[in-house]
Length: 245
Image (cartoon, rainbow, N blue to C red; front, side, top):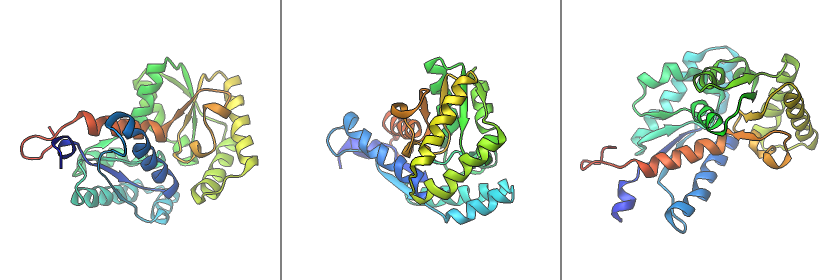
């Protein structure tokens, strides 16, 4: 193995839904060759507990149970050789305050990554789109405020419909044209309410929504996280003992 390959960090993906995790994995593998050469990408390991466990914990409002699942993934990923962890699921980041200090590996935070990009782009007010748990939480508001970016949540009835589309359709690999139109109309409405960007704060939303079909520029959380993980794996290096420097 070449020295360049051996010194890269290994990316650990703590999966939640299969669709979000798969899109994140594919994005890393598709984007890396432009940086590293044909067919090349950092090593990646993935752990995927049953989505049912996460959904049950979220429905119970039990963030400790969510954190336990995330930490179980971190342990499995460390054992498989990962150097750091990403989670291509925005919703369960609500449990991150319970995870980071207890984790055997460091995590990149999806909302922090998106908020930093929003600041870089000069976004003044971002629409937060995602599951009802994510939109109701402080995951994005906290990260956006720290970066000097305003935000707006959809109305409760809009949150319910977004959640239905995500949980009944997108996580099950269903793409329904009427749901695409709903998202497009909602983003147009959020623009009218004063937003100048839309956060795709569910890692499955980019399957149906992008800059090409939205009335606002989008902040694609899945691809931004994948890019951050790729940058981190390449930019960091291992010390002489194989420990990340």
